[in-house]
Structures are given as structure tokens and as C-alpha cells.
Image 1: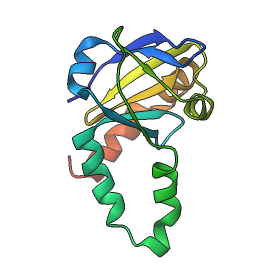
Image 2: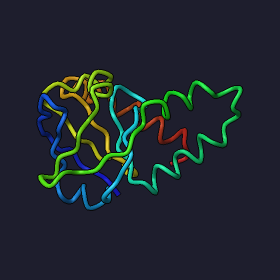
Image 3: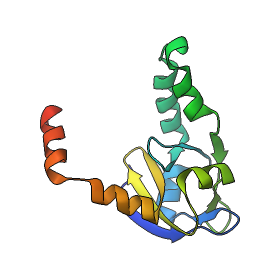
Length: 139
């Protein structure tokens, strides 16, 4: 399970240090994909398989754009000897990852956010709205 918030920098080559306790949970190989928001998601292989099974269950003719969104740029990643992963230029542009990056645990996967985008996301969260959503979900 992934949780917490970690701040690191990404270098000009797209290399980002991932803390060792997160790397252990990711495994040696993992998948990077676009997120639902302006972030990059990193899935351990078993969670990627679980996520993509749900995508595969969608009707092709109706949901082809959703599949393309997640599959088109997805790629396997691994950490180097220094514990860094490489984030493609495509995804750095997509998520606005330039220097300061926030690594966010989201239970089954990690999310990579630019510091500015993460701060905007956090300021948009309203405790009352979250409480209402939880009540609507039967929590």
C-alpha cells in the first residue's frame, strides 16, 4: 500500500529519486502511465494488471478513447543503481514536471505531480465536500 507525500527534484534528463521504501513496494519493474489528473502514475506490475483488466472490460467501440489515453504512452520502468527512475519527456510535459516534484501515495500506485499542480490540487480540496462524498458513497 502506498501512502504519504515526498518532495524531490527531477533533473534535466528526467531522472527522479524514489525513496527506498517506495521502490521496494514497486518492485524491480513497474509501469508508468498518464493519470486521471495532470499527474503521472506509477503502478507495480500486479496493480497495473488489475487496472488494465478493468479497462479491457470496457466496450471497445464506446471506450476506445479511454484505452488510448492510458495505453498509448504507457511504458515499463525500473530504478537505476542510485534509486532513480526516468520519466519520459512526454510525461514530463503532460504533468508539467520541471524541477520540484511531489510523489504521492494513492493506495495502489504512486502519483507524480509538479509542486505547483499539487498545491493547486490541495487547495481545491474542501473538507465539507469530501465528507459529503463519503456520505454519498455510504461511508
